[in-house]
Amino acid sequence: MTIKEKLSALRAIMERESLDAYIISGTDPHNSEYLPAAWKQRQWISGFTGSFGTVVVLKNEAGLWTDTRYFIQAEKQLKDSGIQMHKLRVPEAVDYPEWLATNLPEGSRVGLDSFCISVCDMKNLQETLTPKQITVVEKTDLLGEIWLDRPSLPDAQLFLVPAATAGKSANEKITMIREKLQAAHADYMLFSCLDEIAWLYNVRCNDIIYNPVAISYAVVGKAKAWLFIKNTKVSREIASQLSQEGIEIRDYHHLFLFLEELDKNSVFTVDSATLNYAVYHKLFTEFQVKEQESPIVLAKAIKNPIEVEGFRKACIKDSVALTKFFYWVERNIGNHLTEISVSEQLSAFRAQNDGYAEDSFANISAYGANAALPHYSAIPGEDAELQPRGFYLIDSGGQYTHGTTDITRTVPLGELTRLEKEDYTTVLKGMIALSRCIFPKGTKGCNIDAIARQPLWQTCRNYGHGTGHGIGFFLNVHEGPQAIRQELKNQDVVPGMVTSDEPGLYREGSHGIRHENMILCIPVSKNEFGEWYGFETLTLCYFDTSALLLDLLSEDEKKWLNDYHKTVYEKTAPYLTPEEAQWLAEKTKPVL
Image (tube, rainbow, N blue to C red; front, side, top):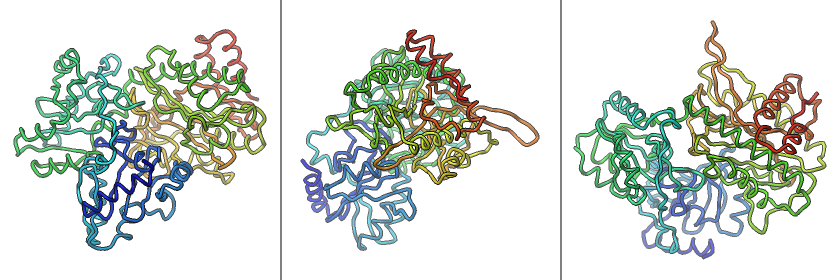
């Protein structure tokens, strides 16, 4: 079916159900960013492959709401589809609830799958539409009637992360949750976010590509804990080990049956920002419900010393793979390398490392003008061939059993223009500035975002995405609660948090540049003015200094770069061939 045929079929169902609009949220019952194939509903109905966006279908029009990362990509993928792009995170942006309130007449009915929208988003939608006498109608997934070849839920097997690797046992983490339960005067805490459940019970799985999580729910009570998961995914051995940690296995589809067994005077705590509305509504109608942010979000973000050491080991392995990769690219440029072929080669180099599980996201492998799309995705048969000129950008990462990595490097393949070198140098100045910054306790990510942007702003340049996101421990490459971006996120940056540092610059039709390292927040000092924090750079990989305009770098910036390159060489060279090590020595020699 074409996109237009799918929209037509959906509109026929909407007519039958007396719906004036239907919302496709683009997430799953677990508020996931990356989805198993069965819940890639937004992609199926629209053809848009980005990781963020909401589709709304009306009788005579349809729209996709997405943010600055995907404007160029969405414009291309939605062409001639009958779906119009609506831009978010720009001045005067209008999100879909407000748009519906303005464009639908009173008495309209808006349908959605309540399993695939969070409580927070549902309440916002209702509060926006109800004053206009527009009704929100909870429906099961209407796409199921027309998506005839829809994939089934995955059957990957559950496995455990040893406490010696995780730094804490599942039982210790459950005890922390019970302390939070007691403080909240509640009986049960229900979790639906897959990475939170994986962290809590020290379990991992391969249900979602690049994200080692299992499709599941979890409930922790005062005396027992439960994992709701497809039974065939849990071996007897794993079930026995979980039982020793006080965790009982129940079937994924039996959550509501389990709730029926409980005392109706019980008190639940839930995170309404992430819990789906269908489960929330079930709880709300039968129990007392208290809403609070999941305590796992912050606990998971503050890495313990064992996790931090795992990250350091993963970054050394990543450095080895990336050094071998760039050495290989430099020696094979001109031999019909394409964006996809080189991306596959990088994944192959990573796979040679002990402890490698999979990539942490789909590589963004972009040559020349394609790199001007921050989340570019090369298409087989249409991917560009690398030429001995201009820039090549590769944003990639690995899932290791002891840590997750996320790194971007932009490298010259040959002759560069003065403008390309200016852009390259300016972006690196921004990345170095954030790496070196010191800030007081209580600082939010938005307070330091401008530090990375200042070198660009000084030359009237900018980028439209955030500067940094949290990174999980052998978990999702994107995690909260911290974020370094211009918008306020009410979360302090605190020691133990691992965050990306990735300013960029994108010139549509010409080139794109992004430099990205992972940085660990650490305590720096304490004096009469308060407590002070800074960052330790975890990522190890050279920056190609041949693309720099050295006169634009300060002496302090040159010192940071030289010190960093000295560390990169010392920690990477022992794992390289003599030829590779000599090549890296040239790449990391001091700049003057």
